[in-house]
Image (tube, rainbow, N blue to C red; front, side, top):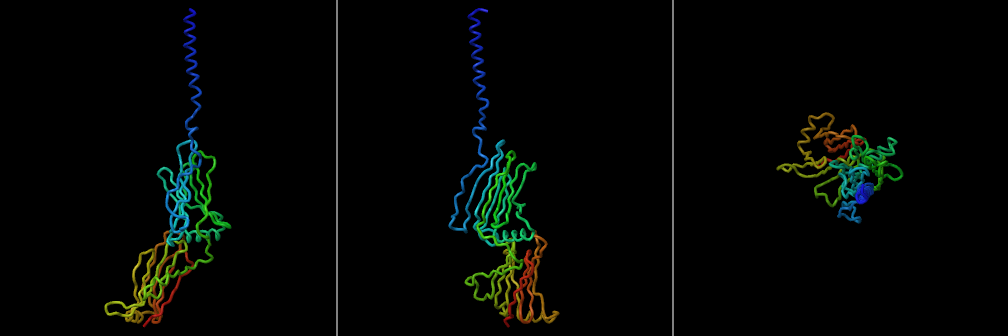
Length: 313
């Protein structure tokens, strides 16, 4: 081999060698690693709401939990709810989103008080929200939402993606004072007297202890039919669905004439209980010659609520 050819070969080999080894350092520089998102990524809060106005919705926290080994992520939204539940009072909303799965749970005043009472009676320190929580089929990813009882009740959320070694855990205070019920009797909450009609003698609501359902009752002393017969009109609504029932002069006397025990059932209605235990829920109106009686039973109440009204004729 000539010197010139050997020199040329060395030059070529050197170029190849330098090119190969020049590329090697680039391989470990993983773009995924250098641009990896943090395990917890804070997101921008949606505009709206005012901390000085508890009746308005507003976002408290918005973040994403990222998986370090994949593109999996779980987005969490924690919100102050201005009108939560049937009672329409402030509450706490916890919502999660993963791919096309969206779920969440709202802690409203009455429902939370009821749940804490059940936890106290059952000696439970924490209660998992089965409707707001979820986990992947392999159990490696999940969102668990807990109600935690104690000196100060709180909500706790645990979020885990597939390859995280342990879940991200956060706790939140409720925007209301938690007062577990000491009894299970229903309580009639009267409306503002200034909102009552001139002929109304009573107007109140009775909430189920969970706050999920309620009855609204209006009682009016008025005249009924075109003949203007004296009567008591009862308007009873169950979750905004209801109608009118009348106890009328003449009609009452006819019904009592054939009744046993001097009492007659004017009307009654029962409702299907779709959860929260085996309790019944219903309302009933009975009457004697002296009084008309409203009987209400919510599904979690230990006994009926009974209110009497004097027959005005």
